[in-house]
Image 1 (tube, protein in one colour):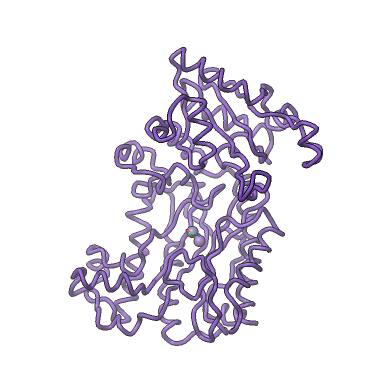
Image 2 (cartoon, protein in one colour; image 1 turned 135 degrees about the vertical axis):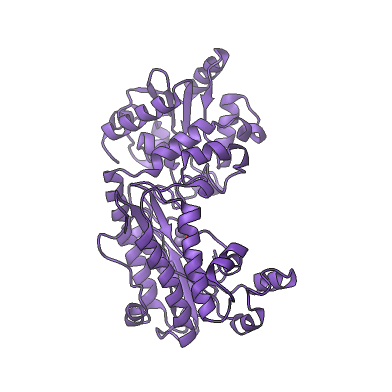
Amino acid sequence: MFSANTYEQRRNELCRKIGKGLILLPGNQNAPNNYPNNAYYFRQDSTFRYYFGLNVPGITGLLDAETGEAALYGDDFTVEDIIWTGPQPTLREMGAEVGVARTFPVGALRERIRKAIALGRRVHYLPPYRGETKLQLADLLGIRTGALHDHKSVDLMLAVAEMREIKSAEEIEALERAFPIGYAMHTTAMRMCRPGVVEREIAGAIEGISKSMGAGVSFPSIVSQHGETLHNLRSDGVLEQGRLLLCDAGGESLEGYCSDHTRTYPVGGRFSERQRAVYEIVLKAHDDVAEAVKPGMMYQRDIHLLSYRILAEGLIGLGLLRGTAEAAVEAGAMTLFMPHGLGHGLGMDVHDCEAFGERSFDFSYIAERAAASGTCIYRSAWKVRPGTVLSDEPGIYFIPALIDKCRAEGLYKGIVNYDALDAWRDFGGIRIEDDLIVTDTGCRMIGGGKHIPITVDELEAVVGK
Ligand code: GLY
Ligand code: MN
Ligand code: MN
């Protein structure tokens, strides 16, 4: 947790940006797994934690954008609760730690919200992503759950994203503290990568590390010899000598900041000629992006397309694409080899602010405002600035179903060499990922000068050892 002053300043800035009405920020509740007292591991809502610092379930924050008044609503633990949980601080005590003097029982929130609505005041809220929060908002606001998205506050979405996206010095330190967790996870996976090991054994070992060193994983670990499947969570394969293993994994620091890295390497530790050739292309795209990124660049136009051009040049060299890299990118042919974005925002969420961003709903009707705001919640119009943190994760994937579909539809004719691709159908996929912080003049990798083994030589020295 940061100082009370940090949270006070953030809340005041948000109130200034919104200007009118109330701002309702629900924290997450415990979500039952298979029966009410057996909940999933608790994960706080990142926006609530950003403004109120508290990492406990069942608390809601409320700000009056006109007066700047902040309040917390939550119920203190009863003796019956404490028998199971042990002694807990009161809401008043927790509020004091984060600079909030006004604390109330949960039951008082409904009346406060209903009174404000009766007075014609707007209640700003973010689009909810959890069932419990949808039910809570529907009850508080008198809006049916299916209509909550229609009344969400676009002003609040953009204001929160603008603030959360630009990391302060203390947040960058927190992100740096998440790096050693990722480092330990990935180097452990590399050492375990030997024939006969089950992918699950590696996933379990590295997820254990994320819990022992921090707050657990920042997303479910992807450990698979089927790297061509972008988010392959099966992990039931038995490692075979010479096949590529893709490991995409990260941890969260205790204060809730994420790491997100990917490495791909051959089981047993020796790259074949073909594997090395594709690996070097992906690594060049990764490195060139990290060289190029600087403030003011547009993510889509300047960064994502740069990675596509470098990958396309490499694929032309392998005889898999024909013509120029520019023409291949222009025709959309690179979406066959890398059907995902080059990166995403990173911070308190591994895909930062995507709880109300890019993948959550259709942006078309706020596209103009999102473009003016330029935040990572709308990547098509995202402009990176000093303090922006983004992943740099190019890849080349050979996805038989996608190759067949594009070929059958006659796409990229004369550009993609489909006949040559026949020999690559069982190659798998390679992705390489690190996390960049945009500085005043360029960017730098998170890691305090240290990096997870990444070159062919570095990997061959550690994999399977
Ligand atoms: N870990 C998922 C991603 O890299 O986007
Ligand atoms: Mn990522
Ligand atoms: Mn990742």
